[in-house]
Image (cartoon, rainbow, N blue to C red; front, side):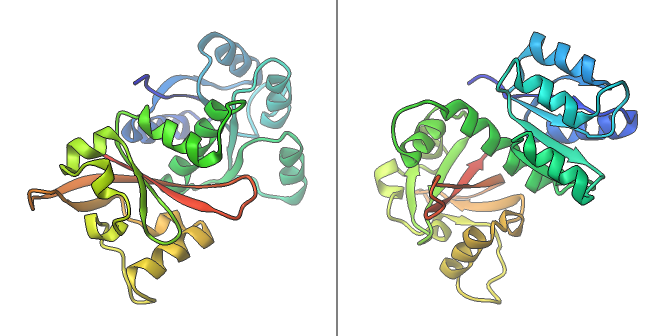
Length: 248
């Protein structure tokens, strides 16, 4: 499975290195750090990253928004704005670029991960035939990580081969099982039972509610501790949402 790549556009050296370290820890390959719009366009053209993290106030004649507009003329690489500025004028300018997301520093690592994964997923699935659900399953099939797809009823509706290897269950055995019967992310259930908690997470896009570590139960009754990465994905209509779970 090809490693997913990210280009960072950030002119504060310490901040850029911090973001790079966070991305590396998440499993991404950083293809470069640009400090100007001109450098960003050159690096994006040369390396063709899967996604670009774009600060807005950067060095040079072009700010991050103008750079994104220029990039859209030559490539369809998804851009995620990662900036300290959230004034209305800046946000409205950013919206007009049709970027994937607008995150304000200091960012939540889980939120950053979710947006990167969803941006890459949407870009890779663009123009493909099939339903959104089918494309999600195709995405997981090609993932090197153990992957599960959970619906709003807390049911595992798809499991890839890496999940079969990790857990010992076949995909057919895992399907129709409640997510929490196999994976215990130590979610607080103070506000309701686990199945209602999953619905709340999906309804509110509160993916950060799930911790980064979970205990999983294998078919042989072994308990494994795994890193848990999650993203919420939704149908274009917005009616159906799924929790995408990656484990390693």
